Length: 380
Image (tube, rainbow, N blue to C red; front, side, top):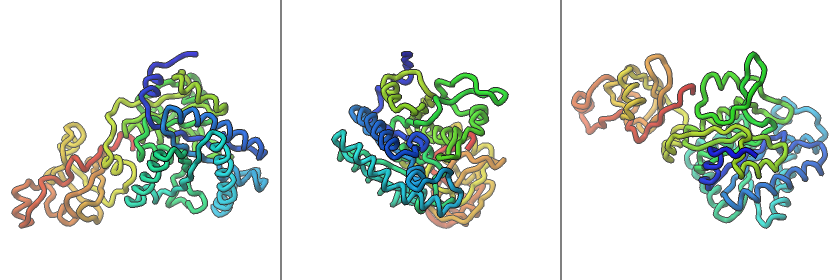
């Protein structure tokens, strides 16, 4: 058994975990086999709960529906997928509750669509519900609401959902259990050595992840796991990919063994308001700024001043979220603007005295204050 000190340190310092279990780990044509797999999983979750607060993100509703109806291939038709999810979800949760009761606790189900975390009031309701369940010693089990989700409102895969849930509740570590034992280097199309610890997601790493999906039961491959890792790393938290074919892997994770791939960050943890900006809002417009403003925002950590504005795109009001872009169109930040689009079009390129003279009112020095702005990681 090889103990990795980076893993051991992260495990020893963690208080709250998000554990995501992929569809293929629960998929089974035999209902008894599915029940046994869930009982094995919850047995390991019970061990985690002795040390941490745990939120479980579980795929498997569509797979359970396929098993119950005898379907041998995941359908492409959205309505049929929704129907299978409706059939399988109740069965899946019944199995989870029975397994939880064997260990002396209950589970609670949250079915989410993307709008549930993007709309501010619903976002807060979801976060408060998760916190209440954890306080009451209930295991929250989160899944995408596949019965109503369509392309416009779906997360796309539960890797992304797990990362977003983790950022909502400030989880110290997100663990993605999958069917491979980590992220592998790929040379000339061939997988070679496992990357044990990854501190930065580079273009080279992204290229290695292409073409690693499996569409029988699941929708996400290694690309989706990298996307999830980018979110958690940006938030200042860690993510660990491990092979969950045998759920006893949880024991090895708790021991800090060098298994799977650990995405480790040294960034400070992002504040709550900046998490909201970075991961859950959509921009209503764009502010194109000059190179001086790019340097001031990205390197100096300064607010964005109207004097650095080149162009304003879109229609938005004061307090809306907008993207800040470099002259080449590269997105560098998201922030809540102090001015409407019409006002910014009037004052772009001007300094504070000129702005007051033009608008004939009390004005803000900043187009976006640094406290209301978050940098966008390179590559996004």
